[in-house]
Amino acid sequence: MRRLLAVLLLLAAAPAGAQGIPEAQRGTWAAGDCAAPGALLHVTARSLARLPAEGGARLIRFRALRPQDGWAIGTGGGAEAPRVMLRAAGEALETIEPDAKMRDDRLPGDAPVLRWTRCDGPPPTLALLHGEGLAFLGALERIEAACQTGTAPDCLREVVAVGDVSGDGLLGVAEIARLLRGAAWALAAQEGAEPDTLAAAAGFGGLAAIAAARLMVEGLDYDGDGRLSAAEMGQDRAAFPTGAGAAAGRPVALDALADGVGLLRRLMEGLAGP
Image 1: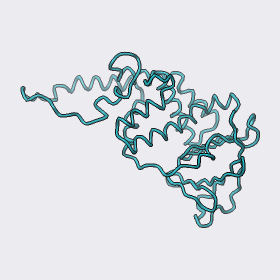
Image 2: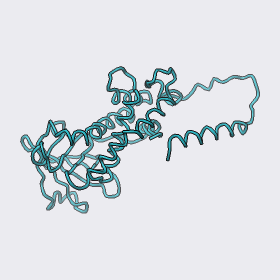
Image 3: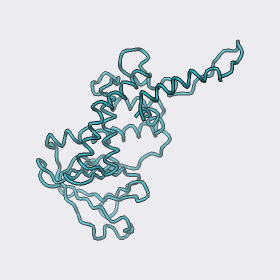
Image 4: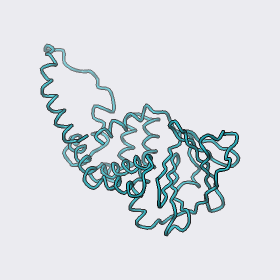
């Protein structure tokens, strides 16, 4: 988590995403009754998370999207390149998850069609378990869009915008911890975690995410107000320095700084943990 800021800045070097899933198909859907669903399906512009009541989660972030015979076909990354087919069916949503070996021209094959009902108000237990993680998926897509198409300052401003719950244009410890909890949930879902493991990942924010958020604030809070601005996060990172320096003086051996830098590095590694 201590590398979160560097990772967000590196998003600018990643390829831009494809056209998104149609807006009418986005949102949260349920298999069965929303009050006690057999599974939830959450669809964003470029992600799909299937969350069964029992069994492992499935999170696919689409690297490519294309239409075919009335379906939107999203393809994920990785060696398997999983595919999901989606289409509107009246007020419902239908999905198919075809076999990984099925050729594109033979889709959907024998894979079953799953029907989902829009679920605007999930039960409190599921909202507590999945809410921050699902919100993080949409936030991450906004960050990616800003970082992949704009400048480093654009990227950092979007990080602040998606995390700014209070609306003051700054990020406090609780707001950063919220993002870290969402990221932990998303990583667990991507690995196929079951509900109890997802709950543990979400609970990461109890102490560890708060501790990591405090370290981040303390390390970048140059004006000492206990919150981070986009400018503070971008200090010396959002643009190359001018190289002004000074002509007077003579270079000293950088080796003389090694002991102090090494001590500082070891201290920070110990505080941040593995």
